[in-house]
Image (cartoon, rainbow, N blue to C red; front, side):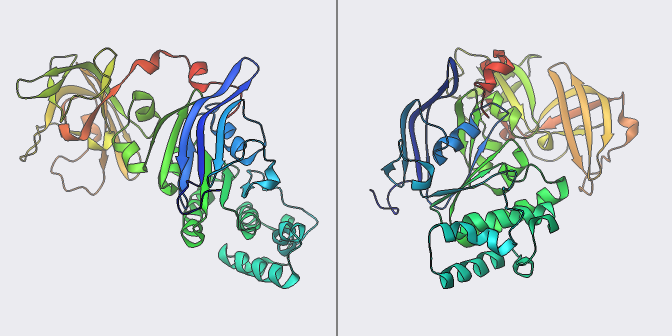
Length: 384
């Protein structure tokens, strides 16, 4: 077995999983480094839960190789792999106290009582539940029960902790609180976390790296910033946050590579992207990068400016969302309140002629061919 300092915590090599004729995972290769908070992100049926179940040993591979810290584990049962799992339903024993739930796995390993007591105290303190040790699961809130399940899993000190949408049953406010808590706990313990979610905000807020999946394939792996600002295709750009897409083609403006919109406007781009010669492409601009106003923008920024008509103005609390119909396509702009801007967002802008603009350095050319696939093709097989 290769040492933990040199081998990835998890390595999938051309892994395929079939259910009859359906392909849930198709020749996936990826590496998860020791100590990462790694998120498997994608829509229902994309293969993320299948990947987690393969790592945990709950289902067998059809082909390929799976390694944990350099050791091939294809044929090892779950209890012989140095991993532990936190499920969405927590799976706590209702007749046991919080402390006994955390101690259960340690007792199964026949650890000495003093070591069990020390670890129970340590991990209940880690998750902020020391004073709840004598309560029973039925006396806990959803967030508290989730933290007990986390303490129980971490108390065994696994090399890898698998988390299968553990926040899915919580309400929105509690889910956001637990995102912060999970990130804090990960930083403190340093255990490799592999987290499955379909929630983009969850992945962006917690992960050190994200694998975006669709149709049994990994579309892109990168840091949250890399994936949000530099998506490799339209599927990733559209799945991670809100995006504007304008059709056109890669061209030249006489000074270098550019993107020509359908209305003839030419947008300079830093370099010609790979894989755009023979396929459909689009220009992606995040709504927060789009400015809008009755007058043209000032300043020295090399903005691209298009005229259009505001077809919808929606107050969203901390920002206003403005939809503009242009001859190059529909653009959505977000104007955050409190910005230093002389052109205030007003409801009177609705149905009026406006200008929209953006810095071309904040737009990205993405391939668009994958949108021809049906939703079922993007989902892949029967597993999540």
